[in-house]
Amino acid sequence: MGRIPAENERFKEWMERSSRSAAAVARDLGVSRAVLSHILTGRNKLSLSVVQHAARVYSDFDLTFVILGTPRDMTRLEEKSQLPKVVVAKKTSIAPKTSVLRASGYDQLILVRDGKFRVLEPEGAEH
Image (cartoon, rainbow, N blue to C red; front, side):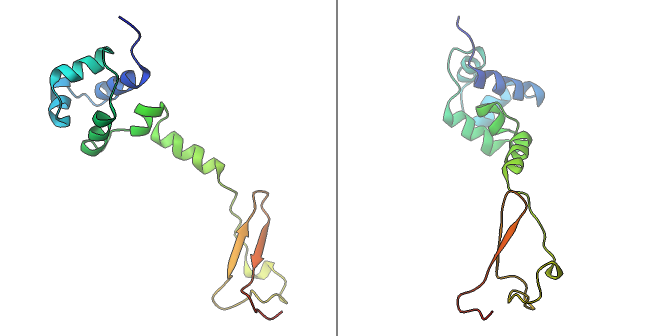
């Protein structure tokens, strides 16, 4: 028999970690025990419909981990590290002559990756 696909292995790992029996998972997902058994042994690849059902039925099912191999929390951390650094500029840090010092705050503030920012004023703003 060939190698078990990585997705199938991760699905099996999720079942073991959550202490769910194959019979219970098959019942909850609406598939036969034989279908689930074939997935767990690698005879059949994990199907999209089984993964979708699992994501809908189980709140602890980590879709990102099973499909991509990256834990959900790790993906969020990677996404956060890709975001530009947010700089909170106090109104007092901008020259008082600018027209962006309004009671309501800034109109639009563009944050740049290197920590700088640019203030966009509305059209027709007086300087």
